[in-house]
Image 1 (cartoon, rainbow, N blue to C red):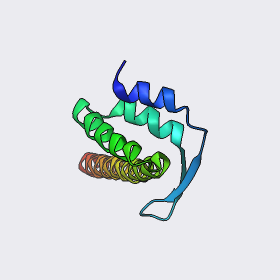
Image 2: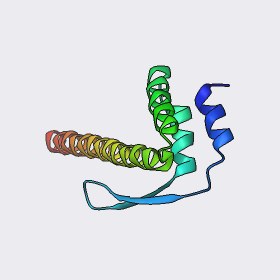
Image 3: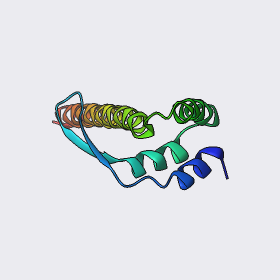
Image 4: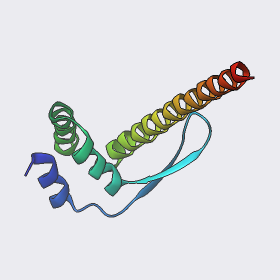
Length: 110
């Protein structure tokens, strides 16, 4: 088990939810538990080590770990929403291009 996993299990944080607006103004809700799951499942070993260093420093200074998790959660929401939007734009371009090809095929047949 990795250090971060052990740390969060021992910390036993109470469920807390945050709401953030993305760059399009849409609201998203994410919890501290979801944020932790994403950190553990979707970050590289190097990223987890960096997160661990920051958490150790916060813990050493009796800081608020929830504030740091909220900061990470906001980044997760913004990055996810941007990625989804880019994927949607790529799909719309593919659909638009497909439509052009189909129109050209129909026009050349007539």
